[in-house]
Image (cartoon, rainbow, N blue to C red; front, side):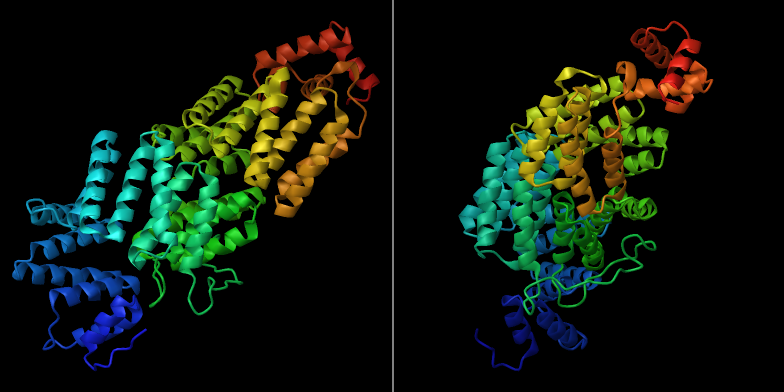
Length: 580
């Protein structure tokens, strides 16, 4: 690499920017700009803006870009002014100032729309595609994305061409054209992995691709690109992200989150990519690492990408909830909510674990109502439906559980053979069939287990093993039940899922006792014990959180199985067979 011999700081800064040595460029231009008599050109002000952004000085980036726009305008350079206006739109949108963003987008269009075709118009086309997609107009969105690609091909820019391919991919995925969309995304990411693109577009595409993969429930691609993104983000002097062995009181599970900045000279995409990595690590069962990475992500995320910090807090809350650290999970979900993310379905499942079933039902139902269109985030809606099934089963709402599971199955089917969606759907269908005591529960549960094992998602696989154990016991196969429970318990213990490990251990211990007499089910035995203790139908319904009608049905079954005709006779049977 050649080293400039000039002592001119502006020339040295230009060279540093060309090498993407942003901290060096920022230091040189920032120092030079402190002297009013030393003017900077519009192009130099744009370099100052870019280097300030990369160095974590977002406010200075905006200020320099405003000056650059004025300088381009004074020079009657509408292409330069238009591109600068678009970047101001982008930065103001990231800073949560939509009115300012809209004004600068309008100005960018004013500068560029009447010009002959030029590379700068690619950014207008990309924005038009995003806006049309947001309104559900897939045809207009695809036309805008393809115009961007055509402009990029005409000007020969690898950066713009890769962004155009990604824009087309996003529109196709939203329109349900999964195979075409993923093929275009892979093509765009080839340029990333080959190192053909600038740092800005490389980081941009990693963030966009990771979001797309998770929203589309394409877990294998998410794993692959997350690993690649973190390798790219790693500091060159170590080749890996910085270690973070100690907890941070102001990060996950601590005090309220503060505004976050990126230390000078660091990669501002690192925190965003790390937040995506937290989601992947969570699914892979690397929970300790996921929580540590969440802490680090919340330190590294720049102030204009706080939604990524919210995602990290949310993922950490999921880990803490499954480990039984309910208070810490509540704090993490609260931080995610403060940063603008609806913390569902994790918060609903937390309320269920706390015994607040009504709050769990209300929370997940409201989240489903707010996310009625699955096109934007297929996985997000699928997770909500899976949680709705679990919550409904917990409150004995079998029709509600069956409805949620059926919608989840339809969602999985609508997107073709997507392993993650299919595993979620099969788990829900199998759990509903088991609750309804239908003989067909084993088939979907075995499919679900195979799916989770293939994806290498251990926690969900162990949860399915618990359901399979119940189904095997109901079928009279105690040995198979114990094998499933033993495996599930080992996985839960390895992950640190303390409540689930205890539940598996209790079921293993319970299975060693003799079978219930008279062919009674576990629920019927519970009802019989409460009858023997003098409980009325209303008392029993309240204790078991079921309806009085359901209690009466259980009693009819108990009387028929035991050959008795009264509560007194049933009570005598319970005492005679040590059920009380």
